[in-house]
Length: 214
Image (cartoon, rainbow, N blue to C red; front, side):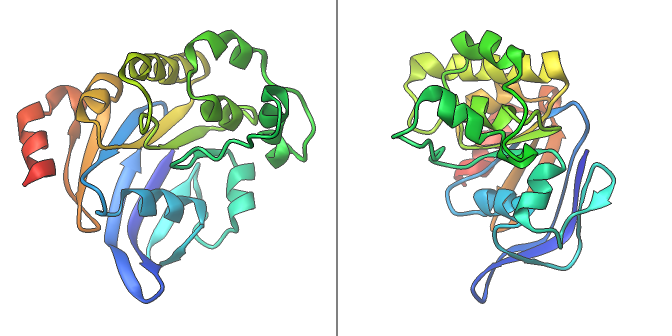
């Protein structure tokens, strides 16, 4: 579904990602974890075309999108929920959801399954990103600022979306327990590079935790 190969990404003249490569297989839920400031959010912004990214390729659904503008990437089926979520506070719930239809020219309707999921989608921005029925859902720190009693519900919602609609998921997180419980594959990042990858079921939590804190 998504294959990143040897990309370099920059803020100004500073290189944040160095020859980064990772894969997100079709139908999987993949976690990208690491400490603050190691390049996780930069990776997602690179996928979306929001920062300067050079070299290598970003293959999505069989096409190299690295030179495409952001709106074209969204049209091709990438749903993105940024860190902070960016909900429009002066719009109603319905109006916010309808903003998610903009990749379709503002036409169409909100898929019925989203309303079915509402009782278990505490992250409203996720519902908005799903409105255009993306092929892949990219989430940046979905548990940030969320009270512990609701974090479990976010995991349930992500797995339901993956199961019901076969939507591939790539999520950036620091909360290791959440990643271990809700992903099928994980990557650990440090200083703009991938330092570990494994099937989540085969990963040793203590080993991964040590990499995140050392």
